[in-house]
Image (cartoon, rainbow, N blue to C red; front, top):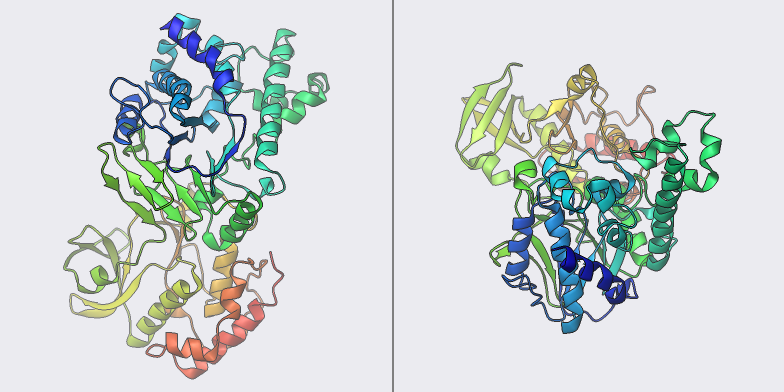
Length: 535
């Protein structure tokens, strides 16, 4: 095993592709976060016909892309690296290339952040001197990892581990990789020197070392080390860690993503890093982003192995049997038929609210309302979807147990703002600029809602997406916003939708729900929202 590993490591610099971009590639197979799930990775690569059961390359001219995070949590990290290093050495003889990208967990292992290394991973490295030796810049794995790219482009698709932040839009792909690699090498080399001089602890995360050092020690660490430790390309907003591509609201992210893709000469980006909610490959922002972390390490992420195959004719998912796997286009269609027609069982929760469990498994909530209030609740839902917000749960009018009102889709076990505050939970903001609270403020101003509170602002427990209720207390006939209304900057992505609202379009949207005076007032409120400063 040691001889084979040496051969692979020694061959790699000779076989490494000289470019970070490729054109006219007929087939690409991309896999997301492995996290030590070696058996699943092996099955997936065999099913995708890039490798046979004897671990020999069979992919011909296929480009295989691993998006990083081979490491941590699972037991088979070393075996996953060995396999990809072997295939990386074999593929060029058939015209293929194996691209292994750095993930944030590779970065963590290189820089000494070992919080997620499992006991099995430590044990697998004992015969080559242990983890620290294996991942040093002279170790068999560290020496390989520091050569790997942060980002590549194949045809019109960019691949990177975490996301594609706008901060890279002013750089070409080669410059991104060169700059990030230089920052990483400086961090590792200077970190090793400072540790040797006892200016830093012998272990620990180098990216935090400068921040954790006291003020008298910081000048001794040197400018080069401190700048590398605070590198934007290696940090939380860099391509290894950024989650905005997978999680930021489309109205906040789409424009920035498309401009960045255009600058890099691409139409889409494929990322991992953020497990998809349904553990299938997801596409979002009209196909500008594909998220392929499907939780391959099942004992931790409850997911399944999936690969994305890209050819000139199609983009499709593959499972570990080679069968075509679903790609979920987000946002999913609303389950209107289920809410309005499917049978259900009712129960009352601790808050006295009526909950519905539908035959298909969908969870709902019923609110008893007058006809006028029900109309306004449904109007809020229609306006929300018309603007592309997706904050209001799917809402239909329906009688439940003899009472008239509305039924809302209520999956994901949402919790309200009061629950968040009482437990001091911090909601992440994955966006590069404004948060989606600005979208909420604009929507509430538009619908004339003045009683948004901790009780009717909720979050989906799975992904922290905003969910808002009690919109039946909106859509009055006053066109003015109250003086106390929260007026943030207006997200640029929402402005075109607001500007496109007309009397005719709203009368068509709300023909069965709102009167002319309510629509006229809505447009007046819209005009005031459009005076807010733009984000």
